[in-house]
Amino acid sequence: MENSVPDIVLFLGRFHPLVVHLPIGFLVFAFLLEVFSRVKKNPVLTTAIPLALFLGGVSALVACILGYMLSLSGDYDENALDSHFWFGVVTTVLAFVAWLIRIEKIKLSNYKKLQPNIAALTLLIIVISVTGHYGGNLTHGSDYLVKYLPFNKEEKTELAAVTNLKEAEVYGHLVAPILDNKCISCHNQSKKKGGLSMVDSVSIHSGGKNGPVLVPGSATKSELVKRVLLDPHSEDFMPPEGKTPLTDEEIAIITYWINSSNAGFKTKVANVETPENITTIASTMLGLTNSNSSEALPTVTKVSEQLIASIEKEGFRLRELVFDSSLFEVVLDVNTIQEVTKDQLHNKLEKLLPIKENIIWLSLESNGITDENVKVISQFTNIQKLKLGKNPISDNAVEYLTSLQKMTSVNLFETNITAKSLRVFSKMKNLKYAYVWKTNIKQKDLEGYNSNNAPKIVLGM
Image: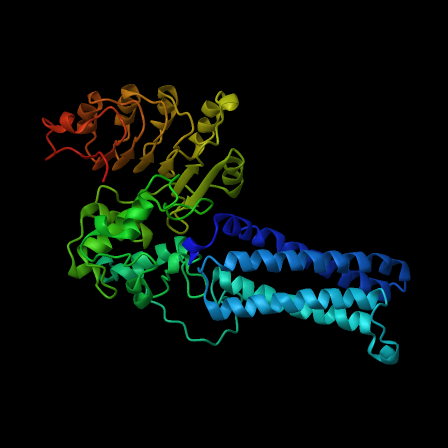
């Protein structure tokens, strides 16, 4: 359906989430003025109510029009959409009725005992709340409001915690949490972007407007994987701009699920061949220790909340990978360092030195990292995953990274490294993957490369 709708209509429709908050603000403001004027016995407070109601009605009308335009994309459940739309229309009509009552164009002198002004406003607040509830359901799923009610009696099916990785279900324990975190907000029963819902196995196998998203046994042919590996600036890249992309580890887990378990929904890790890198990633996700791996989690000193706060003020995002372990993934969002502030980069990186042993995943993509900056990074001796893509670094930087003996993967795409770095990669005893697409390393450079005892060099899909 989306393809038959003019682009300008869909463009304008996307302003609905922005405009829809205006009537809420105006109408709630009018209600509060009415309440306070009665509590304070101050009729002066009511003078602004007609204007607030009129602006609320006008903005609600605009929101309805834009919402209708947005609905033409066909990405929403029709029943939920109808409820939200018609409650929005009722809200708009009530706002104008309440305004007409307030300016006495509609006279209810025979019903003074009912206090029509406060009655109309109270009804408005109730209706706009219901409208917002249905809107939240459309965007976030039907259980968005009540999901965390402490007295919610709905039975929830939860997988039992595992103490051994082999007991884990590939989909339930590993893949489902990734989809819940990164995909479900746009692909649920109420909001089906691209006609795709990912709430359960039936929905996933049903696919979307463009057909199946899974090809069991072949991740490279599965849209679910192909979309997350596209250039982030591509229209088809998933998740869309503004959402947090999947990490290399999350993509590896989904690829493992599709290839090794044929995208099965009940398959256990014990029943499929599991590469060592997947064992490590999965163990980290589940908070288990992978004692057979060189990536076994180190024991480190606890980091204070004050220190974490001071680092986050520098623009870094910290995520504790295992509960109460003080082991972190640290991310500096792309383009945080602009041309005019590049001199600050060295100082920012030095702010990480007090937690250098606590960082095991580090991402600094597209931030102007230089060879000199990598000298600081080389002190973070517990790093296992490092992302330095789209930075002006050379083979000299790779030499500095040889001190990171626990590093298992390094992402250096779109950097200035050459085939000289292949020899350096071989020196890194625990390095398993080097992602070097869009660099000066070409396929022909790998002809004499001994891959038996050296890391896998990834030049792209």
